[in-house]
Amino acid sequence: MSTWGDVAATVAKVAPIVGSILPGVGTVAGAGVSAVASIVASALGTSPDPDSVMDALKNDPDALAKVRQAELDNQKDLAQIAMQREQNQLAAQTAEYQADASDRQSARSYAQTANDHTARNLAYMYTVALFLTIAAHIYIWIAHVPVDPLVLGTINTLEGVLVTMAVKSSEFFTGGSRSADQLANQFAQFATTPGAVTAPGATAPAIQQPSQANSPYRGS
Image (cartoon, rainbow, N blue to C red; front, top):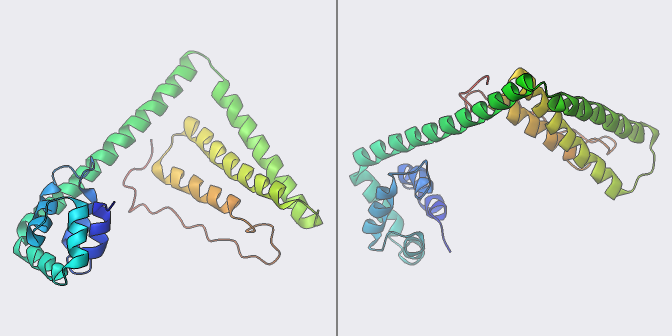
């Protein structure tokens, strides 16, 4: 079964605007862009569903040329649809962020008013466990302790989990952000990459700084 993402990947080189919009068809952020699917289907003489369109793209040697021409003929409308899609995506991301921030603030308020120390105790536990796990990992590495690969893999996974939980616990008290979430994911990926730390002479993967351009939200 084909998807609009498959169609977009096929036509993107000849019709970049159509290719950028089609993956949004049928999604919350892509509401209102189904007209693009109709434009493509009309140009190919098929019904506006991804399976029919993909069949035409595979079987009609002139299909890509038709899609390209359809884009040229509808440039103004497509530009407006693309803009609407970006606005929909931004609105969806904003709603998600606001809901996440509201949830964190509610949890903080409850912890303060109820004098509940559960979150703080968990933060201490995650932090201590993380440092103990890292210390054990370093000792195994430096002392060349023979360890079963399954056990070593478990340690790597545990490090990744503890890094994520420690960062999340810190965000609970200091305020979280999407860039912090991205950084936690990168740390977790680094910690769980097989051989990144334990293989002699191995080069650790570079941890890129979170891009503020990809995440317009800062702070909680």
